[in-house]
Length: 443
Image (cartoon, rainbow, N blue to C red; front, side, top):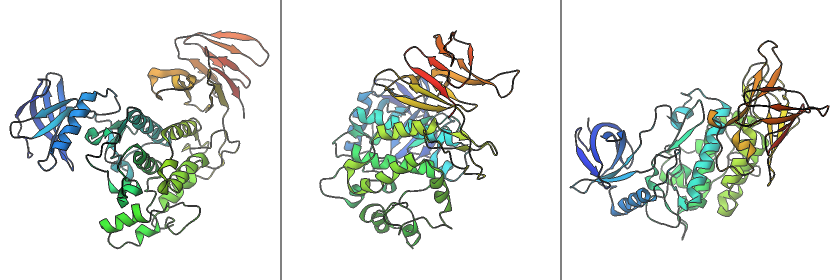
């Protein structure tokens, strides 16, 4: 092991936990990460390079440890660790292997799906929203600090040692490609915070869904040497959205940048509208940037409107509530919309449109007018669309909750659907989930 700490090095955390260095896991711009043994099992230790082990960074880490942000979407600093020579770092949990880095996605080294990417975007938005709601600005939202499960869309935010209380000017300003233009320019009186985080978040969402940077079009291709001066011009002094409706001078090159042209064309209008707002007005006026709640509501609606192409089986994002689903991005066939479940929550009333394809699910968050967190896992499953075992093509909605439902057929007759039972899917069927109500519609 070649690193700052030798295997077998013994350290003690501020809380008195004994730490033994086992091996080097990796290195980044600020320090190295080691696998260590503790009484809690194997954990990770980030150890700062001497040049980064400043009093200001130590103060940030100590403050973050003291906050004790218990959220499973973050590898949060758990304990402060120092040695006799003035070096320091912090203890955190080890990132599970199922979480992969975004560079692998951008290089097309991962197999994933539109549904998983939309979930990853939704979970990412809510993770940073949870942080912002506690008055903490992350300041370095980028492709290097978030990992995701390509199968489920679950996310894990790492390198949380740059997050600070809103208004704190210490620490870094971010990664150039993701920094808000006002920070790139170094405008007087401007400091990184939640408003600049919103720009970085939108860049990250665009890259997740479009596999391209929103400001890299023809202008970037014309740059012979992408040095710091060129980057400041591209991201700060003269930023221009590749799909700016008023100025096409930075539009994607159809040969060199064909991917983003295809992914943009496949995106529903509601998502494109938010990106356009954020990367036109939002580039120049931070107060107009898209908020987390707007991203959350739109991403959830689009996720519930994903359909499979009947011809090739590929997943397609469709515009929520639209009567015309358009054509498949993969084979060009006309898409066919399945029946939908129109679900209305208790007051304050919110209406969800869930397209009923073969893998459709109703989750606990669909029944909540203001869910604190969306979760598409099995632990929050309420209802599942299932196919009749003896009658292919006949579907029903299975009760996977712990409470009975009341179903009302089109003729007015009612039935009780207990947990584990399935109600046949018919147009006009009304369901009472115990507060939230739903109706099946064929169109």
